Length: 505
Image (cartoon, rainbow, N blue to C red; front, top):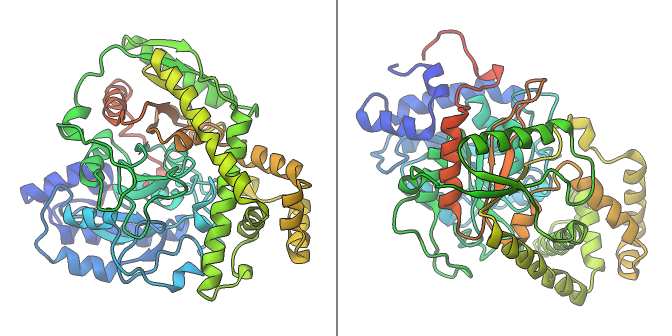
């Protein structure tokens, strides 16, 4: 072949597309390498839950055109429907029903010439910051397979970091692009609410808290993905006016001198690992060396209240999802314990309490809006701890027994409605967000945010930092990211698993 495996691994999606366009390689050659990488890497990582090689072979043999022509990629097994195949959402229940039609995201990727080789693993219903569905097994971090790649787009992040594909679909309802990007040394941009259509099967995901894009290795790939995927579709509840120039062109502009507020304090007052603090402090030094004004400041909002609102949204959404599954013949027992527990809390909520919780989201938006009157961007750790070991994400045995008994007795919804379980909910909020307390603010306010891979720990683990911006500020975020990418390049930082001896295919 004209392209070696290592050259493939070292290229981003933009670079591979350029090589296809120049005739240096072609879609079939790239697919052969991607499939060989799958067979080499997936047994160790379990990043792909549904290979699509036959469809990919058929597609690679066609005349492809567009900015991603011939580029192998994955889509996430949540939201990103591929007609005729199930969108499993990390669950055996939803893996039984094929999607009726492509999502707008998938159709736009196909229109851009991408070759989709499979679906990436995700926790059940994409609910967690780790990727460990019982239906498909856990995904391992390519930097250290004893650790999580994050979630819920953990399969996509593991595959891209290891060099299986250069880019992969992802979505972010509570940090699910930014968390795995931080854990795997990738760049991850979460777009503004309404920037990328999630239809036609859905009008919005999680009250508009979730956005779709990709995880990737380069800023220019994220800008390319924005150009391919951004834009409304018929029936969408939100429409953001597109910029007059492409995101790729905008990303190359100088951002000017920015005033950036930063904080390393957990908004839920949980510990922040010294490495996460160091990651931000190092980023501050780089930003100041580039001429930006960086000051210690944070939005004035109640982090505990935001965590409760976020969990209340979870409760209601999961209850509705399981109720819908029941109507289609599924049983609650087919779902995981945590999923069933969240649904039980949701069934114990009144509609009034759910609406009152949702109304509080405006308080966070107003606080963030006030902050952005004085600051262009907001810098924090992306996650509060280096990628955790798999066992750290498990439910404690005592809590698991209590949850099973309460579910079996049927008492949990009643106790939740009476307020008896409020302390348990508070404990769940703190535990679930201990490692990932910084990302949910962007989700509930519908604003864009990105993880930038600027830090590696003393143990050699990636630990990205997060930048948040006002609504529709993706061009500014991409401009700053491009500047940081040039100032502190990360392209050559790869996990050892991605490196091969000199070889070609």
